Image (cartoon, rainbow, N blue to C red; front, side):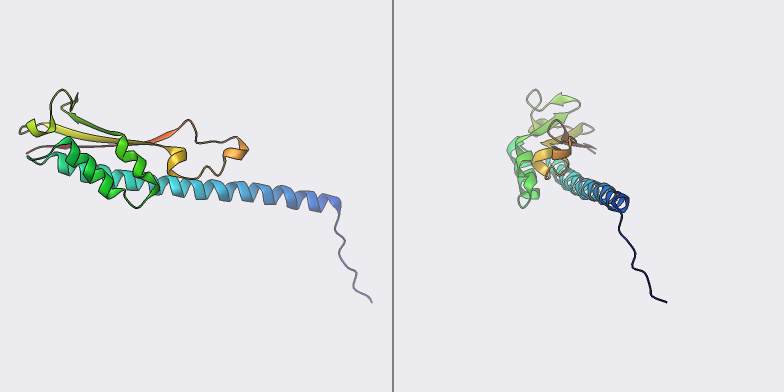
Length: 144
């Protein structure tokens, strides 16, 4: 008795193609999400280092920005060093300089970077672009 060869129908090809497209989009979304998570973690680490620097008595705006640049130097996120927001007790550091921070003040450092500058926009061609979004991180510390 001869063994019959399975025939490939047009419906099977369409189902395979549809499944492959869904798996490809899900894979791209997973990779992009992991990259965004990595970028957020790097920004958070830089903000933590910057708020520790801002809490020191000798801190200046330049020393805090330098700490952010140092933490992000080897990554795509180095543009975040341009978007450093420092606040003391909710006021901008331009109103109250960082070197005038007193005991029990709350020092906060915020970083922001456009999401499409931080990670590749893998889902952009499918209409799920990162162009209008940004990654924002804020760290605060109360001084002793």
